[in-house]
Length: 324
Image (tube, rainbow, N blue to C red):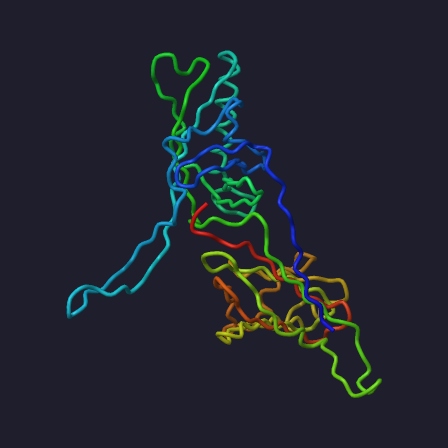
């Protein structure tokens, strides 16, 4: 029989102490630069920390609402479009003497401005991450790019052993993302003889219907990982009947063998074998719809052709939220 497992991961309680931040309450905040270095932002004993007064942009995402005038008065909403978010982030930097302050000022500034350098994926920017952790260990994050503001106050006594800056950070995706991924695992069970001990049908071809729960506020675009053996894979969202099929026999790779994997990203559309091969041509274009998962419960079905014992489908996504 197919099995479904949903691992429960308990986040580690952050070492960064929480402070009260406007719009979100008590939280411990860490900035993670493009190199992966973690910079605590709420440790008031450190040489740099957030000035809570003046922080903004952590609330609900901004939207553009397009309306049409209604003949009988008023208007009707025609389209709603989420917009990029900007976060205002005041920072104090200090040092035991002038040179220590200078080193800290340069290092913290570079941690933010390096987001404007090209990323390894070919993008013109390489976003950092602002992570907001709550006292219960849960955390949300948002990707940020430095926009402006790394300037000192330019006042008497500043720039010697301390100074402050008010950063503006651009968030291309305005939604906050849960640090912990939601996962679903479906695996083909042991094959059975059709006539022993009585007529039966193995579930190796259709792994079964699954209800996927998205606890977030907005749609998510999942990542699928398929483990062979398999010759074709169909993913169907049952409530809308949207689906897409990856036909491995239509690719140069051929059917997935035992232990081989292929990963399908729905946003942006990307299909990669574990060997690094680009298999996007195996999707059933133009009928393919790489569907999203809305908030709440969504019925889905995974079907594998050529499945045997060990064939599996893994679904993963990070819930997205309006606020931190």
